[in-house]
Length: 267
Image (cartoon, rainbow, N blue to C red; front, side, top):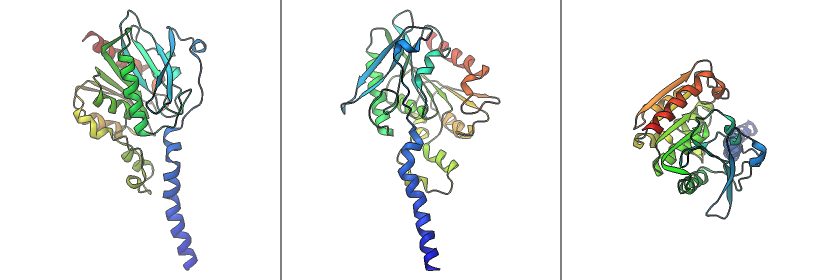
């Protein structure tokens, strides 16, 4: 009996320990795919961009340039394991520049990802892009999907942006982890909290929140909670039949995105 109790205690301790050790890999899922600008060949001019971090590394990506210059800018933050280069082929509105930078450890970006590192890099990239002569610094919008919505929400509290397009956003990583792993003490275990719901009430710029009604990765209720406490104007779009990974392929997805960006550009 004592042996079973010891084994049971070991298992009870072992599962949280394994979850703690594996959480970086489970959360960030960095991808290694990378392509030079010349190999992407999207429908608009693209240049490779790189930014030196304070700790001696480089994060890299691409800038698809809009015209005329200086153009309004969309800074896009991808989900985990997302190859952001693919966004250069998506039908983002003409006239906007589009910045696509891989997180640390993904593509050609160096280093290891963490919540803090992603925040610091986001500020660095924003500042460098806003200084470019071909970017209109008064019209910068942050767009993000899934994990990236936590980075974008943070960025909106730190830099002057005109609006946010959040695709499959979440309230906090703690709340989301509790949904998926109710048997784990996630508040004690989680290193990367991405507490967007605590930041949202202080953000006064417009929000477009787009979700898939059938999203099983980030259930719409978690997105709605973030939307409902947002401090600025907000618009909610739930795409019928869409799940987490096919939302951007739905016909009903791009129309509200274009309308939102057009309103920002005109305003």
